Length: 128
Image 1 (cartoon, rainbow, N blue to C red):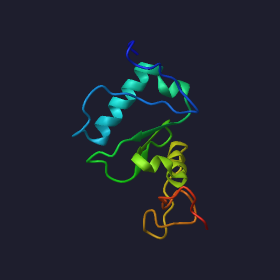
Image 2 (cartoon, rainbow, N blue to C red):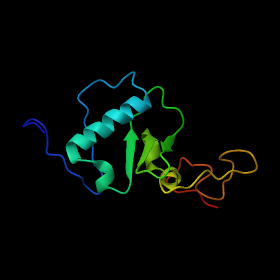
Image 3 (cartoon, rainbow, N blue to C red):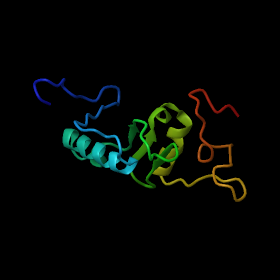
């Protein structure tokens, strides 16, 4: 950080990445790359220090869906408020640890009995 910027640290497992540029018009993939690159510049190589990293990206055009994760990898990416919903967190970290989607018949995400199916936009659910 420069003398005009506050010191940056991880607090309660949360680190805020500051990008000194306009992000409008970026795809989620482009923004993800910029955030990971800045976090790496600030903190060092992420996947050697942390088991799981959640990127909570601001709402931008072009972010289809609610979240995504890489199978057997450390990184999951969430669209804005979806970072706050446990079912989305469990679902995406499930992918990070190698789990696939839980379908009902031939319909993807239709299984609502576990976290690898449908995700809920609630911080108090689902209640089965």
